[in-house]
Image 1 (cartoon, helix red, strand yellow):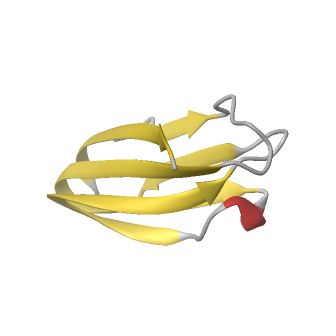
Image 2 (cartoon, rainbow, N blue to C red; image 1 turned 120 degrees about the horizontal axis):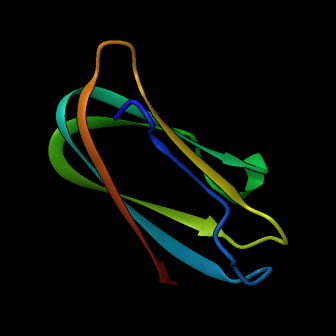
Length: 82
C-alpha cells in the first residue's frame, strides 16, 4: 500500500476503457487521473470490494492510487477496453 499505483498506460486517444480496482486491507485509497477529464476522482474502500471506473484515453493518461493515512493492505488493478 505504501507504494500505491502510479502508471501511465498506453491508451488510444478518445477510446473508452474500464478500470477495475480492488483494495484489500484496512482504511481506504484515493484514485485520481491526470488529466482530470480522463476519469473521476474516487475514494476506494479497502474492504476487498471491486470498484469500476470508466475512463477516456488521451495521449497521456496518468493513474494514481495512494493509500489514505493509516491504510494498510494491497491494491490490484486492471484496464479493459470499453
